Length: 210
Image 1 (cartoon, rainbow, N blue to C red):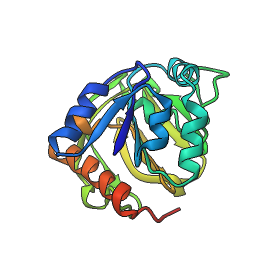
Image 2: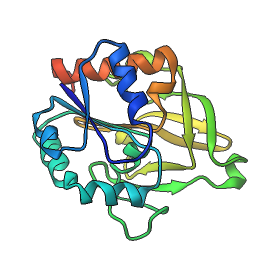
Image 3: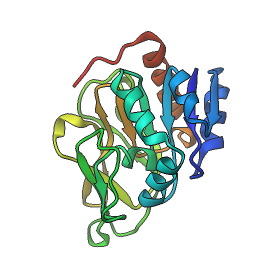
Image 4: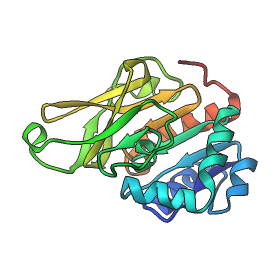
């Protein structure tokens, strides 16, 4: 079974609904012991970086998530959940993220993009082959965000997206950890395919990579 971690931020019910639409068994939980029992982990979220890490630490989830991922359990971070996978964010100076993917989170510069936040549909451009996103090159996904991730190394970038004059990493990956800035639960057929592909990775173990 796949767990969607409930840490009181954002689009949790809609993510759960999308999985259930696909006939995939998921459960939404605040119980950290459920993370250990799950086959895969989904960390969604809409909100602030600092509040997200605060909530996860308060419920005792941080160390358990790190341990389970280190043992090979697949994890998919969505929107804020993706940003929390990095080391830090300019949105919350001094707050440490999970650090599962080396890099930081930065805010769009208005001079470069025109309007903040980015709200609406934008395209994913595949940078490297990946078991979840291979067939989604060029597909449009729905974005709502003011911050974007800057991995330390390009090898962690799966897809890139252009907003205004800024090109940013829209999907990142390190081994069994994926993060996507866009919202699969709001992205029609392409988004549903993303969740289906993640489940294939969880249950068939096709997660080889960097």
